[in-house]
Length: 373
Image (cartoon, rainbow, N blue to C red; front, side, top):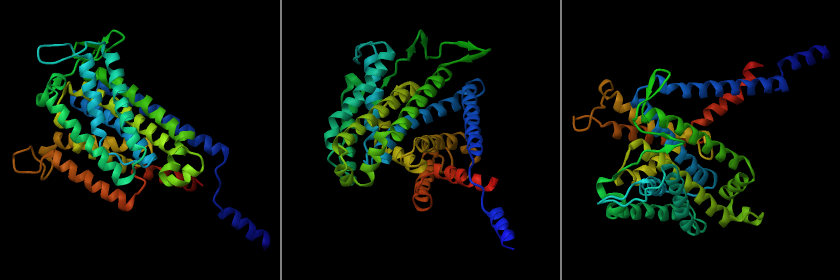
């Protein structure tokens, strides 16, 4: 009888993950990652320009969101001035790469060098602000970074020799290894490649590099120190973590991510305008990391795709959607509708899914071995 009960309990006990099962799970993840990579590489051969540009906007947003997630999600520093550093990257590239004209100044540097310098200038700007970021926290830091938006808007509208004022300025095309990322025809496998198709692969490469670097930071010793600062700043200092230095360094790194995102945005837009780099853009980036998942690289990418693609999709299909119509026609404009939707998504995530959208995938991954057993 006892043997029967023991056998019954053993049969009812969930099977633990064996090394073979873990290997199969990892192999499945690798296969899915390879399939996704092949799909992304093949998309320029099949998608039209609208969807390619929408995807490029999502890539640029994802790079900026990863930087903000390192700052806010992993370290706990609230920043509402992320758009300021995007503007530095975008306009810095234009100034460094643009030619001097009658109305606008430019240094005429090689575009690849101009992009690198623009990212470095964004990092320098973050470094100048880092002493403040290292000493403030919570709402006080948010208010201080919010001041950067007003300062940046004043400079963008009034430094007309550099920024072009309210009308903005054209963005020089990127040139790298003899390839110019403009609309000059380039035929690949009988498919004409324009600027969007060329920039697609550049954006993928930049996003991959930024994501892997941020993932390495979060999984290493710096990431553990950042999380300790976020969870309990005083305790982290007692344990020997240089809190002010880490907070300042993360602010610089986040600023450089934003600068790179600004460069990519400028290349996609092909013209920079001051109105785009306002407080609304900073709030959108905060919505990205909250919806996707705080402190997660994958969450930043998912949230960026959701927030940046939503208005594009609503604009594309506004004729077929109820209550959504073109601006000035009596309905809700696609831009306004998208803000309502991702605003509601932020509330829903905060109330019902604190880990963001990536938490759904993690829950599924935890339940999957039990379902198989």
